[in-house]
Length: 318
Ligand code: CTP
Image 1 (cartoon, rainbow, N blue to C red):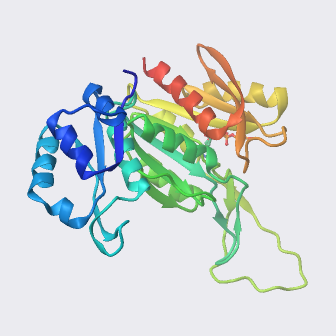
Image 2 (cartoon, rainbow, N blue to C red):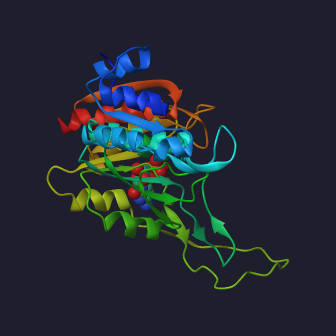
């Protein structure tokens, strides 16, 4: 009664035949007959059994009724030898399930743009000024938004972790490139979780700077504030979420100020003075600041924090 989706993996020739005939003589076939939601089948069997007219006819019937079939693949078979009949890899079956669940997700049809990671500003052709952001928070947000059915674009600056599956990935390096990528896209919701450099070397050297005994003085110039620009250009109905990494009570006060100054709908504040959270950490603990009030999300893995942030986004979208 409660399952959103039913997966049968492996689905044998026998089970497929029972499903096609509406037979319910064991827990699997009973569950399948009583299940009203999407059904995913991952057939696995001997290649001649798969090719047999009986199995092929059963598959036709099941497909016609709306079953989603993953595989089988050609490869090594359980009984030995190889041929068509090997069950698809669990990752492929899982991806199919995710895609089906996303279609009915709470953010289905919403275009979400997320910036993640930390920008790098060149000093010369091999050195840069960077920061400690790993991109974990932005990647967790992208994965959670995709799970909820959103069309996700991830503008990624130097991630230390892999980007999630099922999102459009745009890789950038510097603050300027990140700004260009973000400002050039349409979106219903923009989450600026990237740590964007506030300053960059004013005159980066073209080749590699050679070592010498003299000191090296670098002049830094301000970068443009992407979030501020997004606030200025914002069209009606678009939601803008900024992040603030700051320290202590004074930092929280500055984050509240940022909500007004940058004209955003939500600021996600995290206190970088606390050990084990925020930059380059697995966990986070944040305060969500909006015009209508503040919510503290207790220390949790970034995946859970991402879910809390997206719950707030869904509330703001009404
Ligand atoms: N941001 C941006 N463009 C920049 C710098 C920051 O879009 N050039 C965005 C970040 O992605 C983040 C928010 O602005 O969403 C952070 O604001 P910022 O004013 O940079 O605050 P902090 O860096 O947290 O603190 P400080 O005010 O000390 O710089």
